[in-house]
Length: 124
Image 1 (cartoon, one colour):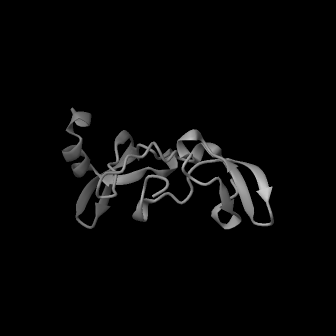
Image 2: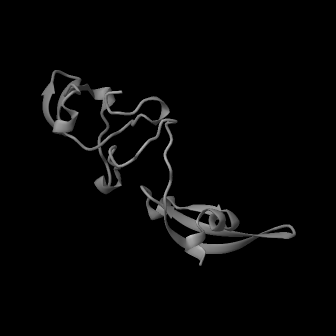
Image 3: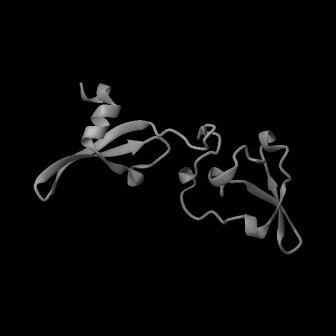
């Protein structure tokens, strides 16, 4: 509960924080922002993960709004591609959809009829 979320959606890795001091062999003091003043700034090495890669891929824990059921609503940003897939005798229209808080590589294929039903304003 220290980070405002509980249960399955509690964030495993929150953001990038600078290590300001090494205390002993396995404890580090982190530079935390003022809004996390209630969190103790010392962490065991097992709770930290070395950041390797693009720091732009880390999502801020404040940007995801979780409701009472510990779920969140995906918001459609753009339709990237359209295809018609053939399954035996039926044809199914599919759309590659980009969602908020995701990158192009994480876009998903969704059924065209369902997208037209949920988002009719995009198909007018």
